Image (tube, rainbow, N blue to C red; front, top):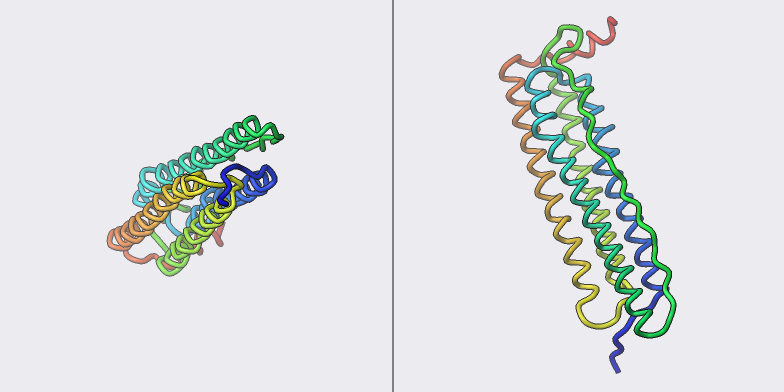
Length: 213
């Protein structure tokens, strides 16, 4: 006989796993993007092109992804709590709602300068190496979302489309992040090429400028 209902212990376990996946996602999109990408580029790429890219393209895109992720995960957890409470009332059982705290982060691009000690340009080799980190960060973000989808596969709600709806909701933001990070990688490559074309490769000069300060 196929049961329809809920398992409160499994719901709690599932939500805790979703929350852990959410923390991993924000670490990738928030912390790693800030320290590894923005922080990594700060002393390697300084000119109008770099500021325009980071302020007008990169920051709005990542801030939007973080905001969308916050809304999606908060909605998923709230939906699971509400459903579990409804099932508990229907079955005259107990369920304790699990808390969820949004992690508010925005990108700080103030470290990207128009010049460093008067030098405008790019250390092409080092900047390209930093740019390659986008792939790793994007994979970490997608891995976190896969983790979240796996967590809701055994969400404690038995029967119907309850689990599949949660998986689909997380799949939407996963596809959005995948598309956005690919676009950012393409834009980064193009912006770097534009800088090289404008200033030629000033490899080492920015590092030397820092060393003489």
